[in-house]
Length: 309
Image 1 (cartoon, rainbow, N blue to C red):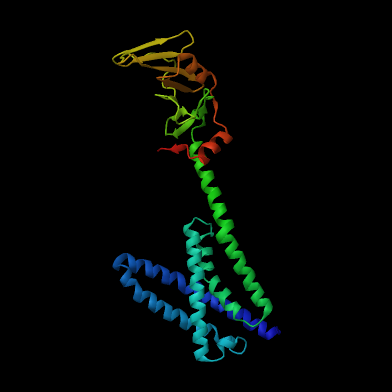
Image 2 (cartoon, rainbow, N blue to C red; image 1 turned 90 degrees about the vertical axis):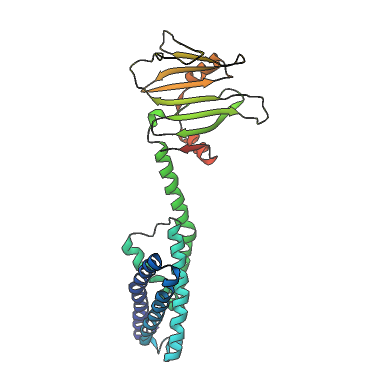
């Protein structure tokens, strides 16, 4: 490409980009405002007017290269070229909006406004009869597709995952698990504003297991644990020499629920079950350990943990 033709081509693509970057955000804001106040029907005339204005300005941007780009050689052909650039470039903008709606990071507000003109400049570059210009446009297009379709979504998922982990880790002093007794596993965990609850259920769905085991970690409210002053009907409570609180609640039919409460660092650990015996509950308390990253990842991957505000 001769130096003069190269300068004309660069000016041409710059004008196409500047035209779209200046007009399209204004048109977008106008469409949103009109649709918000008057409905979709009211936005149609605004879009039509904006499209006509955009095509006209693009046609003007094609004037400097009427001797370089064959489709810009005459006014009718230049208008046709402008319609093609507008239509195909708008598809690119819509793809960018879809990516942005999928939480793909497209930079600051200024960067996003600048990017609105890129699809139109890339489309215009494909009409330039020069191999290097078209190869450059193809490289830009490929980079955009790779980022918007693969790299950006992957980064968005990673950021979302890290944000979830951060929410779960807000109170690490409460995030403790116990080693599950044989035949059961963690079926569900819940992170609340001031507690961490874990339910243990049988691994086999057909296993005869009328109850479950639950573990709750909560902040310690008193210096030492003690039995409540008022007990419910059928409840008994004792405190042993090590400060462990044992509460037994009897139910009709001879069944009962055992609850053991023990101080664990700056928190209280509470385990309860209607089917696991007291030695089993004590083993749960004895095997308390901080929730590891691997355990948290497993719970998140299998959707067995929730966060409640």
